[in-house]
Image (tube, rainbow, N blue to C red; front, side):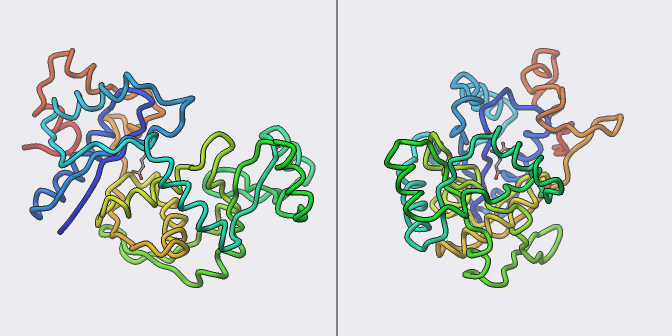
Length: 279
Ligand code: GLU
């Protein structure tokens, strides 16, 4: 059975780009007699707000979407992520990183030519070089630390990896482009990459539909699936919808929200059509 999901972060109201993503996931599930799930990705306490969760549910229902089962809230699933981290830690693939953002920036500036990945400059590896007694001493002293994936080791453990995108075909995974990604943040035992990978597996998602702005991230998710012994779903990364002037309707842009369109008198059918799904 096909299981898809829509997984918004409650950092604002939904806009047309979100509607496109949600409608696509819903369509793929319903066309196949499958399940469409909703997950709220609210692990980032500094950016997510509870009132946006209600707004998301309201906007989705208004636009005509229904979902199956309970809404999964990432903020309530920390134990799942902790278990995933423990497993990777036991395999010796994680290391504690005590660096602050400022220290990382300074180190990158010092080194001159820091390689860039899809999310910006790569972590220069400062804490990877710490020896075990030093790590233990810092942890014992209560120094806050994130947990990073030792990408070179992880890559060597996993070997060649690929995944399939329904629109883009077979893709070789190149997670090394991200460097030593953070999997456990200083303030919580999770990060986007870890939570999304575990959730998709735990929820039995078989087809991940999402925007192609997350295409590169899938390489990291594929690696985590291999390391954690999780199944690999199929993917469909859709192109990002643009407005009449060709501007991306991405979340960072000032795209009209569904709430604003509704207030301006647009009907759900109008909005579905604007989001690329005319009835
Ligand atoms: N929560 C992510 C976002 O709103 C989407 C994650 C995903 O679909 O994998 O951008």
